Image (tube, rainbow, N blue to C red):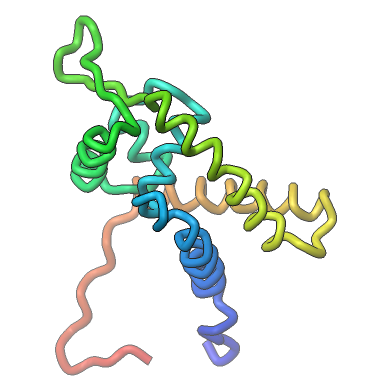
Length: 161
């Protein structure tokens, strides 16, 4: 543990990059009345239309109950539509409306510009390796979250080092 450095730890660095990218990109969303989670929903639906709420939650990393409210707000804004799936009245599919599609298509080039700026100086093969590594890391953690029990609570009087 002597060589552990919080400011060099993978989760810290990953979060730091993600938070900064989110904050910078969000500045472009505010004039459109959007939040970053709303953009994630729209971009996911642009890529893969007609998604069930659970699929959309998994793709956007927005918690299901929060996503349900968010989709309601976006529906009232005319950005997405909801429809019940035939034969399964409990399942709802979410789609972009034409207005939602036009808006996300105006925002995607800005997202791409932020991504290109973040990856500046990396060779295309380094970028591909980074993407692949992040997909693997996510898969590793997803398998861990499904199988690992939570750590037991610390005993009172004991402090973490």
